[in-house]
Length: 256
Image 1 (cartoon, rainbow, N blue to C red):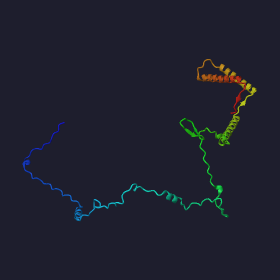
Image 2 (cartoon, one colour):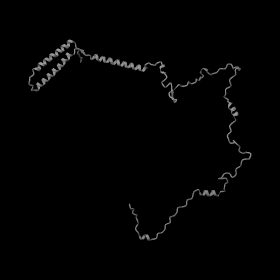
Image 3 (tube, rainbow, N blue to C red):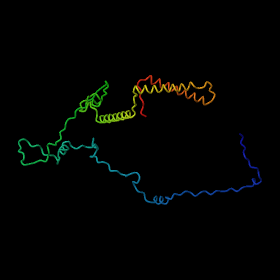
Image 4 (spheres, rainbow, N blue to C red):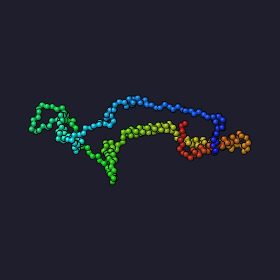
């Protein structure tokens, strides 16, 4: 992509001499602490102001540095042991067997409540690997500690209560079912009643069959067709009932 440089057109005014413009310089920076520094420089010089004391008193020849002189010194063992034994609150020594004990003294100390320290028994552990892995024997389940309880092998009280409630609910349900069965009990037909019903069904079948035989051979109207279908349905139902009463000797009839 070519870039086109803008060049201004030449003019006769560009031939005229131009006067040089002198830009004024900014004022020189002067610190605000300059007067104080000048005043401080006019003061007389103070010795040992920056380089320390001009003369240092040297050590005396008889006070030369000795070996281990700057190491901290520990107190004397005998003195420290003696001071450590001095205790103003220390009890008097135990009397000897030759001394006569003072009579009439009473103590407030109760010897029945003195603490007796029993040595703790070692905790039994079970090591089950050659690398030393161990576990507490009491919590491992290998110790038969539950069989030693007084109620071991007995049904817990809450389970006994639950079983009693369950048994009571079952008995109430059984009594309710028995009562409903007694209310809805079916009546058993006797042999005479069964025979009477069977004879009545057969008579009805004979009557309907005789009526069916009296139908005309030509059924050309809807009324004749309806009568024929009604008689056929009645005969089929009667035949089914007769077969049932002849087949079963014991028959139950519901009250409702």
